[in-house]
Length: 269
Image (cartoon, rainbow, N blue to C red; front, side, top):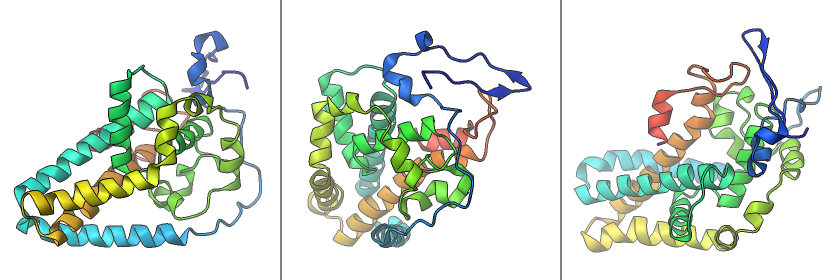
């Protein structure tokens, strides 16, 4: 399909978007109504045991961190809030608006800040995040959507990270044009050193800084500014995929599941 998208709303057919109406850099963001799931039972997806263990330990640590909040130092809480605000910008202004949808242009200093903030968020590198998000828009609410909301709240919230990707996600994901991100050296540099950078940020900034600079206990630093802070950021972001596809109004297009949800908007910046 060549840069066209249309929907049924209130019994009237919308005019299709024509190729000349669409900026070339966002042509792969448009919903493709021609793609439909194949009939028959969906394939059984294997679990990602390492992700299940990681998420379980993270949320157990976060729950314990809640019990430690009353006894932590004020600077520890402030650091957690500050880091999540910066990391949130790395996802919303960076991976989402700048690199997934190309909604604005940014000079090098801002791109460097956003790539660092995105690394702090630890929600996959920009290239992988943008690829999944473009697939989510183009093949929304089908098996090719990485967090297909038709499979329920839990799956679209976190379950999609706990199982292997549906074959359709891989198949259709390979058809997306990612040449713009492959050509951006900063994005590919982050992708190359992502795991190392994330490890250093989590150990040094979130755990050692409170312990070293204002005498916070190591346990408080680990459970509050690392586990609790990170778990809150993840769940606020995941609500965009789950709650905002199930609860709220649809002022733009009633033919799709995405909704306006003020609480989710505030939580996710």
